[in-house]
Image 1 (cartoon, rainbow, N blue to C red):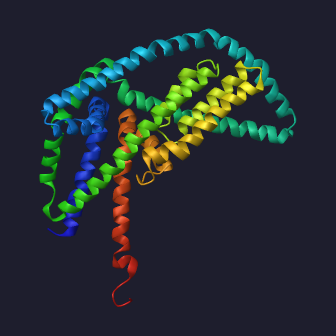
Image 2 (cartoon, rainbow, N blue to C red; image 1 turned 90 degrees about the horizontal axis):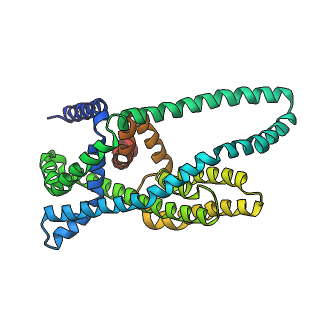
Image 3 (cartoon, rainbow, N blue to C red; image 1 turned 135 degrees about the vertical axis):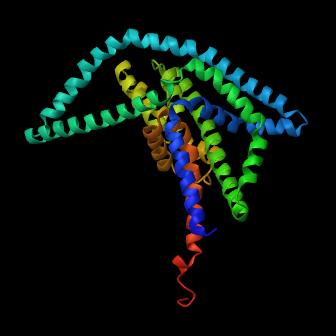
Length: 355
């Protein structure tokens, strides 16, 4: 078989796979979540298996431990979050009044200082951009919800996902071996090498970034609560979760907590404490957590991760968000491989006669 026919074969296969993913995106959520859990927990099962524990028993113990941790965290956090949300609903009218009394007069004073032509242009531009941004965010959020969570509710997700994760973890090595036996013999070693690099990149980013999110979420929640900020627990936890998207979590937490602090506190030093918490958290994340837990060799740039998450959510909904980082890792590894091939080819070096 010629190289052109092989390339056409694999491109057709890739196109059919993407088409199937797009058509079935609405029902894939429990399976994608189960696959993610299996991927994250498989190293623990491998360690138990190396200690001469049967694979099925190791899978059961690891999965039960994981579910137990989730249940305990839910029992601990849900009442606290629920209490803060109830408090938010109570004080929301007060905050609305404060915004009307403090923010709107300040904006009016600023606007009156501007020339009339600049004010009109500013209002027109703000209206256009605000409408476009709100529309884009609304479309992405509605697509995410309708593409995943609206079809499979939480109860269904809770029942199907553990079953999928159990069978995937139990049969992980068998499935990997079966896929390996299907590789084209001529390129098997090259494919294995790229698969190992994808696994190293993906595991390094996902597991490392998950630890970064956990540490930041706990730090922000405790620090903001200790600073006396209302809803500091919820804002801190949300900032930690959103930190999986680089810079988004810190930006959300900084804007939300600073705005709330300006409304809640009359003393500027208390507002400065809230600002300092996020500046300190950002410094620790950039200089300690990310270099130590994620590292510089994973090959996933922050901008590439943000683009992948937004593109995945826009195209495939919540399933696309879950698949975005793995797909970004695969594309990154294949792009680096293609670049290495190009740099060692006559297309870059020139023909033998020219050299």
